[in-house]
Amino acid sequence: MFNKQNSVKIKKWVIVVFVVIAIAFNVFLTWLFSQVETTSYLYILIPFGLIINVFYIMMVKDFFFFTSKRRKNTIDSKLHLLDKIDYLKPISDELIDLNSNGVSSEIEQDSLSNLNSSDGDLLDEEGNIVENFKLPRLLKRPINHRKTIQLSQYCDKLRSYLLDNGLKIDKKSIREVFSSMAATRMIILRSPSVKMTRLFIDLFTDFIGSKHTYEVASNQWRSYRDLRSNGGGFNPFIEDAYQNKALINFMTFSKTNLTHLDKYLSEIMDFSVDPALSNYLNENNKLPNNIWFFIIPSDINESITSRKLLESSFTVDLDIKIIEPKEVVEQNDIILTYQSLTEQLNEAYETQYLEEDQWKKLDQIESYVNNHIDYKLDNRVFRQLERYTSTYILCGGEISESVDSILASKILPFVELLNITKTEEDDQGFFTLFENLFGLENLVKSKKQIKHLEDKFHSNNEV
Image (cartoon, rainbow, N blue to C red; front, side, top):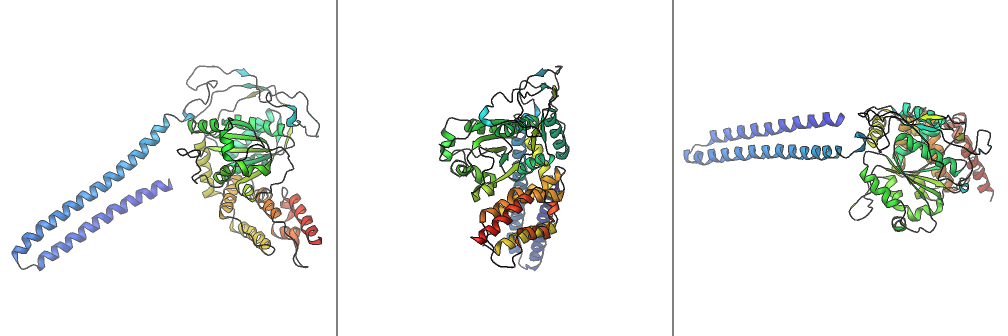
């Protein structure tokens, strides 16, 4: 609405400017005629003035015609896309059209059929291994393509859906997944096992109605070219994303070695930091904007040692446990389209944000680090932090929780990578710094990392 109002204002000002110029020119011409004493000169000046006015009128007419034509072409091109976007029709033949008279039906879910023992175990709330876990039957429902829902309500609905399917998850983890989607296109997911992470991804993508491609990472990949030419799922995934522009499209790389990601996902990392960059799949096609990547490390305790990977990704530690599922679960009837997501996120960036005092606290962390080593976060990383915190608040989270989350998932991993040592005897250390800035009682998620940094800080000084 803001842009539309601006365009109307600009159009009015353009008309006013054209009219003022025309009046000023003709006033000047009239004055010039009054100064001419020789009649023969008037016979030359009057036709000249008429010709100038005619050319001016034609120029103004062409200007508005061109503007109108360009606007029409833009609208026509967008209307042409409406014939193809999937949120106007069911996303698969199995779904029931709202206009049909079909009835709901139950189907068996098979999300666990492609998992094996090497993916780890499913663990309950006591940490015991869950044997013979089976997903409930899914009651298919008509998809409501017109209904919208606030992201905070959508998070609550997703959590209920996961609980019904036997996956107990902390609400903060759900907020962090959506916040990471707003900040980047590459999300590293950790949980007690690969199997539990994959179960979450299967249920998550099914709930929001997104397309999902799964690929086991190979240590043989040495470049982006290897990824594209290995005959796997990457190229079909990109093609599918282009064909389903209205949908969110996910690709999961499982069992990855984080130290190898720079080799074959370097271009994806650039794209994740800034999707507006010209990251081409080939000489004709750029990477589509409606794609995201989940990364599942083979070693859940593996640290990120690459600055580029830290800048381009967010890490979410999923707090999930297996519980007893229901026998039958209703399918979610509200899919999250790419357009719906981006509209809500853009609104959040304007209405939900950290106050200035919170950013000043983060600046003090950077200043403290700079006292020990010359380092500054890239401006694009700060932009990520803005998008992340805005979305976290939009999802129903508290401001203090959003700060705790970005400390744990982004800022503290950067600080650890710098390997800071104590420089002065009266150096307050990380514990005192964060206690003074935020209060350690408010840093539930990042407190353990702060303790780790503090210990490393002192151990580095002793060496």
